[in-house]
Length: 338
Image 1: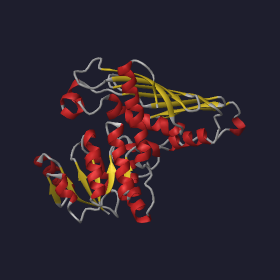
Image 2: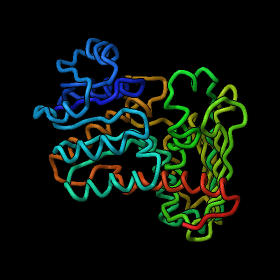
Image 3: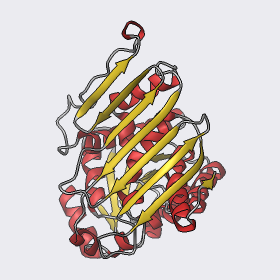
Image 4: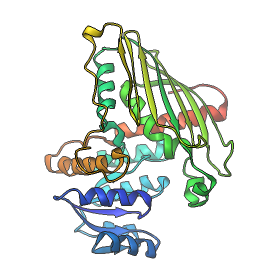
């Protein structure tokens, strides 16, 4: 497939390097509203076509798929326009900043039949997949509690470096969304209620730098989410699931606990090393570059095979719903029902 990248900021480089790893795919165009940024990006990656208006890029018949790498509140507008232009889409996280805008992406995909892949590369981690399988198959018994520890560090310079970072979602939508998606995906059941806190405690910004949510799942299980961008020097993102028959947990550094009340019937321990690590990593965190490549290849395969991509928008909206629920509960000061 011939790919184009819209938005030549930080994450666009991850997409470009991922495409370099895929011999069957081509990066044929890029676009940014800042000409100097688009030009520099094109020069760095040898991109033949450069646009400064994404609508002109979407008119290009050579472009078959677009990677939407713009600020979060533009994801919906550009993804919908791309699908209606006959393009396949890769939409960076978060899918959008409101449930309504995220739903518009789903509606456009249904309306056009276009394939759209949403980026939540942590779902590819073997340990995460093993936890999801253990939960789904009942190896842990009834789930009572799950935890997601999402403790990042972003200094004031981070917020000052780009205006959109102060208005398009804070710790939850920009950093925590990966972990919020992952814990909900591993639990594999709907959220029933959420009680949330969100506040700006230290940074000068218009978005939250600290948030927490207590989610009650449909089964009665409780899911606790802790998220901040004030945790110096930053800590490994971690997840733990507690069931009546055992406890499993892991973080960015590997498996922490895989204990069952009946060891004889316990699932085998998952690998501690992220998959695709046999290839040279693009970054020090393999679940960024290597796994982006996997998801971009999967989109191309989905178009060719006429099937749903690995992470369709109807799944990616769950994290947006949860985050907006935490935010709404925090503003109202009461639990919110889903």
